[in-house]
Length: 539
View 1: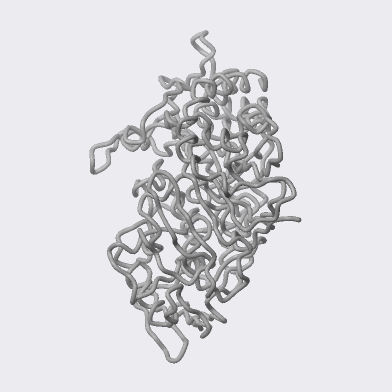
View 2: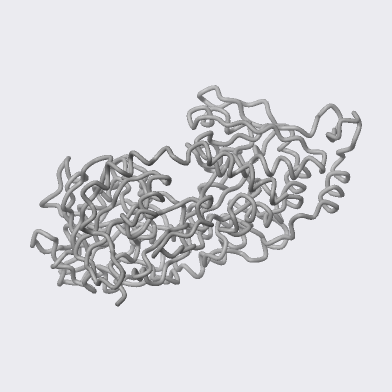
């Protein structure tokens, strides 16, 4: 199985392997002066670690949610072990009823243009984000109040423990320098300042001399916007100090570069329509699937799939089996881990669920229902394609026939409520569990497309959101996954079959020290830059 999966993936990658060469050549024409030579100590870097942000560098519209906002500071942040520590704040506390969050600011912070950062800038940032209509969700925030001299009071409409995520991720913007063009030329108090953005090609930043915390070692950093193939070509030719690469390139050695394989909660798994067919969305898209609505089908798939084989075959060993959407995070329930590749137990569950062989074609039936459904993947994603095909192959001996189809995202949006979909999620925010599994989020945008609902799970969610400490909230998040009787995990309702967590792979100059990295979130943005100010050049 491993050999078959690996050969399939390599064949697909061969089709696109040379697609980025011209892109790399064009973007790198003037970059030779910043590259490393052996034994040289330098203070400039060239990085090819992902695509540019579509909407620019404005935190109030979503910039910085995955990784450091670079140009801006946040009130709080997480260290490499995901503990909450101070940034702009010196302290914070929550009222007993959970409705008022008080944050006290340090008084020695300046924006890169020399103006002081004050509580008014914090108020302005949150009020702007509240009405931005972006991916940021601040609907729980009622108002922001200033309490002189250095305190900000956030008044919530109802208690919500996950409000702390906004304090951890929302970069503070200057009221005096904010305008419609802010995202194109940002001003902030973060470790780096904006220099130049050539859209589609590069971003240049420099160290902020007014930064209040540990000063960055590197004085200039250039981000090149290259696809994975072009980034790999640039690393091979010595033109960049770091390149993000796919697993298919991970076995190739590159001179003077080290492969950094970073664990993540960047999960890939199968979303199952949870309810029977028959209903439609307001837009007229069908809801439900009679096969995947059967608990026995979902549980059998979760038991029968060989996650280790997927990691080795599709990811070239650069990943880990996935058992939930929050593996190894503080709010993960380790009791949700189950043995997989257990074909015998999977067959028993199907038999007890009323599925049996009948037609001689190897596909199980239950009355008039055939154990067959379509699994859709985004056609642009070769990794998800390989996972879908390999999983379908694994399940054929079980008597479940999966029809694998690649579609555009526009097509998937119309089909995802009635078809299984190979999806990806992963965040440092426990609210993502709520968004994906809450009955209140059924069919809301891309959240909970399978219409999963469990009253007990929803009750735990409400308690987690209403908690006044992360520790208390985590207890309820864990129970929502599995409380010994029910939950949204594989031990419970199994509305998803999580398969693998990708490792994020980077070729890094052997002289570049990138410090201690957090477990990585979903690959949007530049999560590896979260500690960019701590990077150093080794002697």
